[in-house]
Image (cartoon, rainbow, N blue to C red; front, side, top):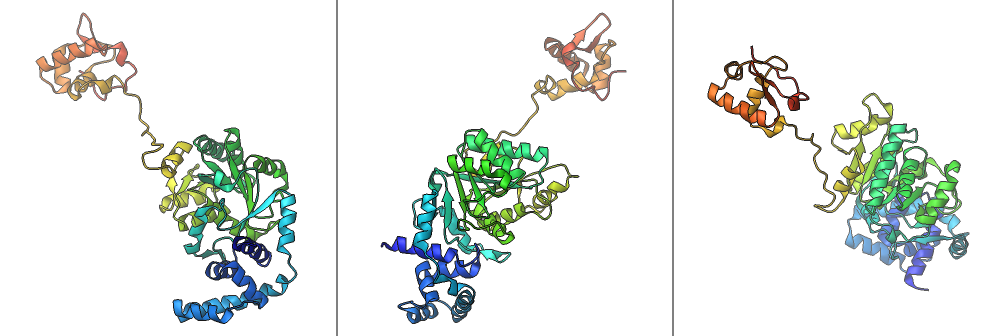
Length: 411
């Protein structure tokens, strides 16, 4: 058995022992390696005391003490169950169902997950996943680059439309859309990517062999056919609150950036945004009506500068793309006839009456310009259809009729 395969089996076993994202377990595995942690729990470590000595020489005594406390807590909580597990049989059962277990060192292991090592904890969840259970036609390294689109389960029609548009634009630009397969914004994001002919990843808070919510079984199965369904939780696991909290950090770390579309003050989508901040990925937020409770959390993130306001998929691409790529033009009104004349000519234009005709000397006085200069300006405006000369003088031309009414006219 290769070292990578032994590491995989150890991680399979450990993933059955604790909840996803348990920082005690993820921290020990990151520091000591899964095989060593498993052997310590079984009391079979060939060099347990040497490992302790190494910790004390390489790190501080405080760090070694903290590691010992974590180790003792893990042993107390889960070690007795380790003996009953059969990771080889579990991998074989998963393989028969089209499920694989991806671990660090595999070709398809997402490199972005490494950022979780320094991201701390939230809600007592954190650390790099022990592994990812994956059901899907494509490898995770084929589903890159990735963009997370998340938001409220109780989404409005507006929110679902915007989420679908953002996902579709990203998908057409080659991004794989990552979301959680929940009702509302998640569902709209997956469907938007699929409708655009793109790929998508559903990150679940239960086993990849289960559908949650149950009403989305068809959607989740279709995602597995064209993309991937991913979970930190082993097959068969049911959705639990703590698993949703752990799942959010995976969504954020998998993605080049996170877009939040509609999120109330208390929202799991904001948890995903927080994790995106911690792993130094762009956080983007779509504003809603200021009176909408569904967007209060989004608006607060924008207000305090924790998220960048975006209004379309093109804004998102500019933020997550490479420098100089997907640049968005600043929206401007088309130039009007008034924009095409000089400032002095606009003074004369503003002095022209709409219907009655007045002489050029009256227009000169109203515009504050000399008579000769005003007359030359009137000739130019006449050539451009902005002024009309009649038998009694001058008035505004037909081409200027749609321009804003001037603030003052000739007497």
